[in-house]
Length: 67
Image 1: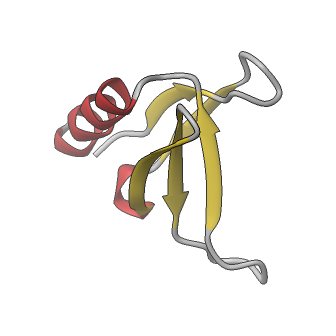
Image 2: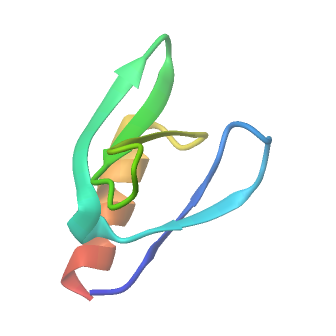
């Protein structure tokens, strides 16, 4: 397993690295891909909006999970 490199929508173009083992859901909301990850802090799970399409984000997460 390696980290998955994606691009955050806000702030635009910011690179984010996600541990695929921490992803709970991956969905499209209002035309944007939203990734929900497990939360280890006091705020619980996190919702991250990325620039990649749902299919591209899912593929990148799958590749990282198998590496």
